[in-house]
Image 1 (cartoon, helix red, strand yellow):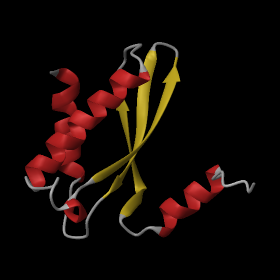
Image 2: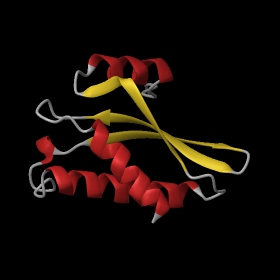
Image 3: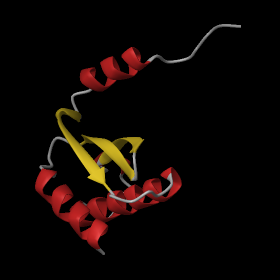
Length: 108
């Protein structure tokens, strides 16, 4: 039986090597609440759906045009948050829209 577990260093190197992943920009989605990781993940899925629908409404059919979010959930005292790296197709510039949509999602 071989050990096929991926290390943190391998994940980091794979994200850096992929040119579609914007590793120079890291977004942090704060909730300022003590919510579960399942609830945080649902909020992030809704955010991803809203962003992808605004850019290309047929993103579910054409997955190569989908904007991906690599999320790493963390918890500190009374604050569940997620660190996000974006995977963006080369024809998009989405940073401003992501920031705008995330403010709408958190406050609504």
